Amino acid sequence: MTVSSAYAGRRFATQADAESWVGEIWSGLAAEGVDAVTLFEQERAVYGPMSLHA
Image (cartoon, rainbow, N blue to C red; front, side, top):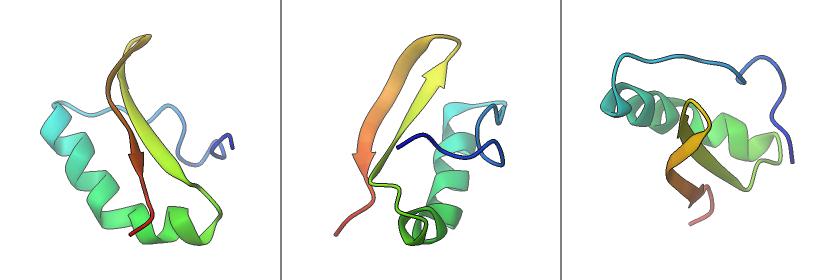
């Protein structure tokens, strides 16, 4: 599933900031039907895919 433009393209100063943000919104993403998230640095995946399911 592709995430809506409301989330795509978000930029963060650090990976920790990005992970914290995901930690704050993961339940909303899951409610929208998102199964997993991946954090990218430019075009390179640096973390994930991380499941949003228990």
